[in-house]
Image 1 (cartoon, rainbow, N blue to C red):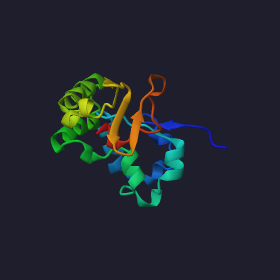
Image 2 (image 1 turned 120 degrees about the horizontal axis):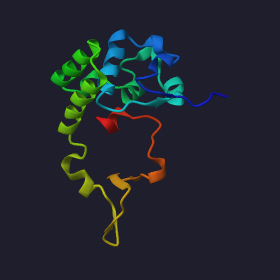
Image 3 (image 1 turned 90 degrees about the vertical axis):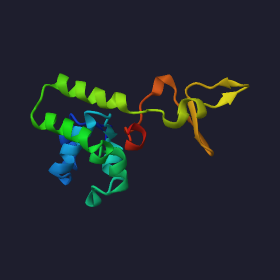
Length: 152
């Protein structure tokens, strides 16, 4: 039985399939993960990704940061800092500026996607799709992976 392990930019070198990832893709993961969260667990990494087909493999693209998640200028800014081994506080400062320009709730999602019961909002839930509702209990605010779909 395999034990649970979570991989992030800090310990990606421990991923058993680390050697399958090109140096260019590893750099992109490092750069983008300075701006967006990155985490994937051992089950996803070891059982759901076809490592022979990366970087285009769908689960890999969903769970591992991709260069295209940032604009060209933003990517270059963070990439240059990473390549020059800039101080972590400077990288965080530049990444935060990029984050603040993002819209985490486009098109009124906070208002439109919050379901209501007896005309009262049900906080901690989102109704983004007709067939389902997303439930976010405070005690379990952790996903199996920080998917690029959610965190871009």
